[in-house]
Length: 197
Ligand code: FES
Image 1 (spheres, rainbow, N blue to C red):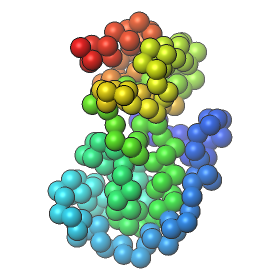
Image 2: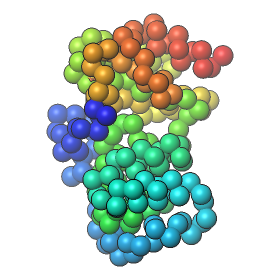
Image 3: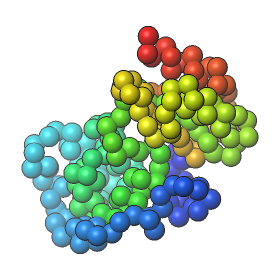
Image 4: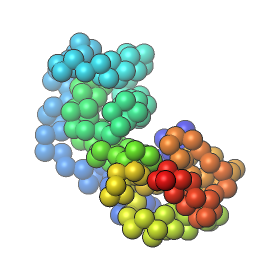
């Protein structure tokens, strides 16, 4: 996916966390100490961790599969809680700081419980120049939230992404995992309001 190609050190994205801003207090000490723990499953017995095990095992625990594993984790858990990040860090033998850095860099990942629905507005260059920024502003204004927030009723989390790899249909918005082409503020508002009826 296109959004996965951006690098966490891309400094053009103002106001967003980069790996350099991520706290490293416990990170670099927790990563490689128990590399085999993830392979045995999570102590809680939560079967969702199996999904992560399978993804990591298939990639032979290569560190470059990190984004894919986080994506699976977000699908399975709804958001990336600390325990999940720690599990992934141990499984891939990566510093926790690195895993945190990636998880906080991409707006598709959330470290907080999300809403029932998610709306991800692409603000990559192609989408932005074709009105993606206006779509995002309209949603923020109408629902009184900022990007990264969830509506107070818990119905919708509003996120943004840099490029979804669908520039030909810009501006693109992902509604609950489905990419919608050529969005306008009106179309996006109509879709999200439909969730809330
Ligand atoms: S900029 Fe590429 S899909 Fe939006």
